[in-house]
Amino acid sequence: FSGDIPGDFFSKMGSLRKIWFSRNKFSGKIPDSLAGLKYLLELHLENNEFTGPIPILSQANLATINFSNNKLQGLIPQSLSKFGSNPFQGNPDLCGNQIGRECKAVASGEKSEGSGSTKWIIIGLVVVLLLVAILFKSKRKDDQFEKLEKESLDEAVKVHLNKRSMSTRTSMRSSRKGRSRSGSDMGDLVVVNDEKGIFGMPDLMKAAAEVLGNGGLGSAYKAVLGNGVSVVVKRLRETNKFNKESFDAEIRRLARIRHRNILQPLAYHY
Image (cartoon, rainbow, N blue to C red; front, side, top):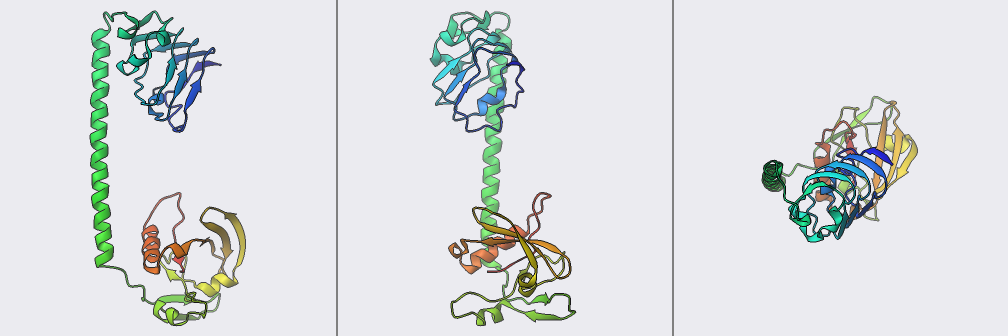
């Protein structure tokens, strides 16, 4: 293999443990994205034509490395001192305590670059900690809001039956009274978004449907209602892990999500 490897090439390969690219003709800089592989155990890049500095690799589990016989330059990162000198042989422009070669004119530049990297790492950690603190605080506020102002689940829901211009009003309270002997709730849908119109459980039961697929949570169907509107119905397998109040709160939270790649929830049934 030959040519440059993009700097972000490994950014989406977080589970990589061993990389052996030795004895090729790779050129250009060693990708900085290697530093983000936290499970990396072995890295062999020897006998290529890599140039530029060696990225700072600080993975605690990194066991073997080999950068020998390339065209690498600059200061060898201090984090790689434990590997001795052999992994860096054959790179005349490398310097550092590991190979007993003092850095000359580039020493100040390399040093400032290392301190600059450290500074940005510290700033990044501070930002991450602040974000975690903000998210934790907002989560606590959400939890308190749900406890103090739980939405009424007994509010009326309009139901439009198929193409007939007939509407009725039903409530979750009346549906609780209509439980079957098996204990399942035979109530209607709870509408959380009426952008596609108002429809009820009878509309879904009479709709033409096809299976879209099966996943870890359950099956998904495409249903075409009597008025021509197509909807996706997701039937969950493990809803008994939630009590009704928790399920309602979770679905209403999902209904507030707005994203171009997520279908907007319209209604739900427990």
